[in-house]
Image 1 (cartoon, rainbow, N blue to C red):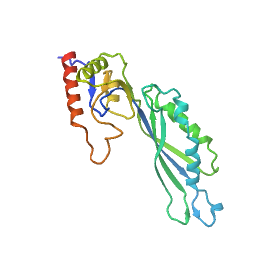
Image 2: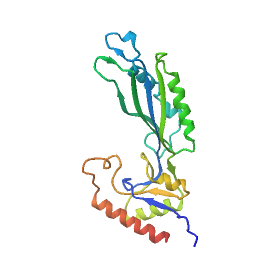
Image 3: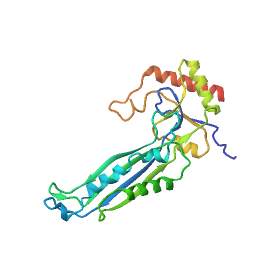
Image 4: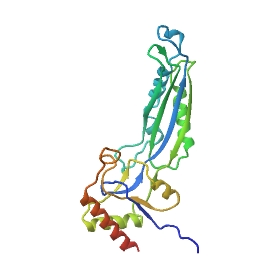
Length: 230
């Protein structure tokens, strides 16, 4: 018997009992700069890779909003490009010959292929006023386009009506994280996020927790959604 594709999906991510209809995408890079190491007493005889890396990172300021300049109203903030890790140097008295940064670029839901972001990154790096002997290489480590579902999709309407019946003031919103919704959306399954707790206040913290009454409200909302759609 032929399998039927899912009509819709709900993912129980912590959304503060709001209805997540759009989520960030993300793209990650490692940026490595090679210079020439030397004794810190003669910096003129070396090329400081950390200095060159700093200049390149400054050149990336504002790049995220240049590529995606119009943030949807669903998100509290627009796209961002963050430096999340830096490594470099070998000793206190040695000019570093190599330095590396990890870049975490959060995207609005997009149909842009990763090559669009690759080109923007490379152009910005090449424009940085660094020493001629400093050489930069970069590698894309992952890519997710994000996800979004129409605000008037049946699954959105069903969840909102069910939540209101439970007494929740649930409204469509954007989620500033990457979840499994992107995989379902890519497969053509209309997907929303709906759950107790907050990604920013509760997730990835010591002693993660949610309120029991919020958990009950969400369970009752799920029950009503199932009754309505099935």
